[in-house]
Image (cartoon, rainbow, N blue to C red; front, side, top):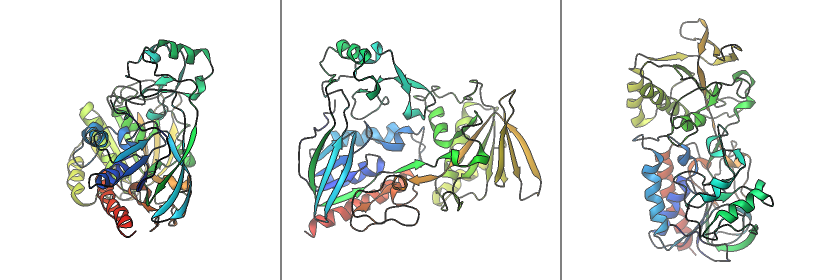
Length: 421
């Protein structure tokens, strides 16, 4: 089992902030040519958004396909130290000589953990499951997900100081639960910093006409990924949140927040591909199902054009060019009614579906959480700094493959900073 590094004061060369696919790739590329790297991740696990996907392009692999290999590479590389549940509080200095203050929040579970699950068995408190976007609940003593790295349980802060926490401690035969664990702050030195904190789904509640949060059977594209995943809230069954009914007729609404001056003015790049991919989820799971994609433009760059043509050839998949004006709920059946003008035919459509998936835009994490140091941003809050480097979706909207490619280039830039010292 991986042994996570402790929070003792250290010094090193390259600091990678964000443990998703871009951050992991940057760290590995630098470490495997001999440079010391620190990975800092605010979640209790590495893997980022990719860990939440059902499948990803270009090969439609499950997350285990790429992440497991990378986790082994991290585990076996003495040049990499990683810190989960950790955030950057302060950055001072400049390229070649940064002073960085980090804060690690308590996990309440130490390296003795064997993932036996006894603490979860005795825990009698449940909390919303953030990994599944709140579509189910989990114990307050939990493993974040099946392939979490490090493989170590977490106790939720809400039970600390309560009898449930003591029950969890008493159940552990390995002395792995430390109820006195505290947040700790420590300093490191770094010559180069790479910001790889990724993206967040745009808040669909900000678009009143699309009724997310008001109509039960309207979900987001990331929620759809979790529904389709075998380790998701429904064990891979694509069913409606309102009543658990199998979805036979589904709609995908493109540009939900993207390409809109009132929300995200830019194209989020991945949304068209995500919806095309998700039509295959439901079509493969239920051959009698039908899917409709409401779009402004369909953008499938490069090699993905072939995938688009494959989906388009499916007679049970329809494409309607038009921006959705309104989404409503049939209060009796909980069906979702979509109103849209088909711009090619000029007809106004009112169509009924079992469920609607919003292709919500990709917002950089720095839209809400800035770099605590000398970084520059473009007009959409993507990091474009030449000093504190950026990679992946905090730099520009990207899919998994291009995130890996840009991360490799960013690792080279970080190394160049050290060489120039």
